[in-house]
Amino acid sequence: MTAALPPAAEVGSIACLMLGAIGDLLVTTPTIRALRAAYPAARLTVILRHELAPLAQGNPCVDEVLAFRSGGAWRKAAFLATLARRRFDLWVDLHVPTFNTFGSNDAVFRRNALMMRVARSRYRLGYAAPALAPHLTHAVPVPDDAVFAAENIVASTLRIVDGDPGGARKELPPADATTRAAASALLGADAGPVVGLFFGSNQPAGVWPRARVAELCRALPAALPGHRFALLGGPAERTTAAAVMEEHGIGRFLDLVARCALPVTAEVMRRCAAVVATDSGPMHMADALGVPLVALFAAKNPLPLWLPLSPAARVLHHDVDCRRCLLSVCPRGNLCLDLISPADVIDALRDRLAK
Image (cartoon, rainbow, N blue to C red; front, side, top):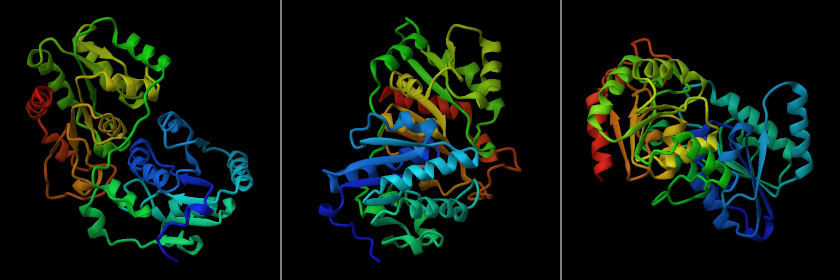
């Protein structure tokens, strides 16, 4: 086995597997671009969760999006049957066996190995994780944790294709006319600058404490006169958004929580003067769009791992004695995030807006 890529003359179709969340998908976009450069004539298919399909559709490096729906055994069997019929020349597993705060990497790669076997591709490329290695024709050695802890996940993913992380950036496809119109309708006719706000996370340990959110929202109107503030997020952010709107009412604050499909959220962010976000899918979306970004990072992961790449981003982070705990639920009240004060956020926002 070797990590060298198969010859381009023998690869007419490629399947790239990524079944993670928003951020997991966006950090793979530089690797997808590198694959397109290596195989310009091949048909490139990305396999991802169905709810994330809009984030890849329209990407000029992607020819097809194959949506995976979790659910009952019959649905999974039907998807596996689809893979068996396709017979891609090259199968690329884009998952990286780095620090997992959700569950087990072994479980992820056992699932991936099943899909890889069913697809019966001539060439199979990926990290040599124990569950996956026996099925690979082109295996990438797994570095030790110290290497993963010191580099950005984008660089770790590019190692799969021996790509150069220098100058890499995440990518989001441009919005279509319908999406642009929906974003315009949500933001309203007021042409004043908007700051997007997202304070949630898929993991409770990544959420900025609600008391801090309330303090910030009280201070923002006076700190940034002339700006409006758009609350972003999904159903999990409804309670926090409702508390903010109850205190401030309709005016300077726009409640867009759970009102936007993913492409519309991206287009709203594209129109923002700046975005404040915790380490989350929306943070990676703002990073991909290159909008001025203030990113609030917990200390539960090694810091370099999920950092934004855009020079328009500024990261706020506090080291604590329990750093790198890898916990999805914090027993200390999200101390590392609570140490980020609203004054810190406002100072960073002013800095981003000035630049």
